[in-house]
Image (cartoon, rainbow, N blue to C red; front, side, top):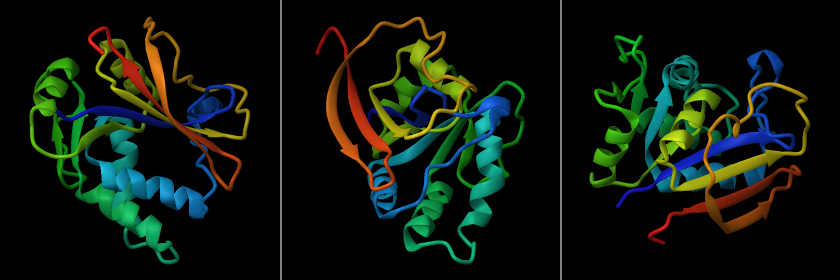
Amino acid sequence: MRKLVLSMVISLDGFVDAPGGEFIAPDWSADLDGWTDSMVARFDTLLYGRAAWELMAAHWPAAAREAGASPAQQRLAAFMNASRKIVFSRRLKDATAWENSVIASASLVDTVAAERGRPGRDMVVFAGAKFAQTAIRAGVVDEYWLLTLPMLFGGGSRLFEGHCQRERLALLETRPLDTGAVFTRHAVLRPEQ
């Protein structure tokens, strides 16, 4: 059965963006290339809310052609563009701006349940604090992949805010990166586990 992973870059003080919504990207390095390659190997379906999908749709189609991009960055761009993308939005009427995108026709819970039974690799949410919080509240997240940057943003959108969930987690992996960031991977322990 396919799993849903929530993968986010966060600051040490728990924010996924800085005040005003500014995205702060991790420093690129050989270790980060390895981390992105692990995403490419594990996932084939990306889940988004409208706002994050629109930002990604404006960036990734052209990113595959950027001069000076490393081979790992080119692999990531190819993955982002080729992967199936499901957008959850009541306002978005057309998802043709980014190839392989569809607008969800059912709720997040129902869509994830249907996707779990489909053949393929796992699914991932990895952009958009509000949509990530929605996924957490809906109880559909099976694993958390957090890349914690060695930075304090001092404000912005918190990943774990207002989710009203108490969940037990099992630590699956901890890995420091050469940039000072730390990658952690946790599985959600459900009562049947």
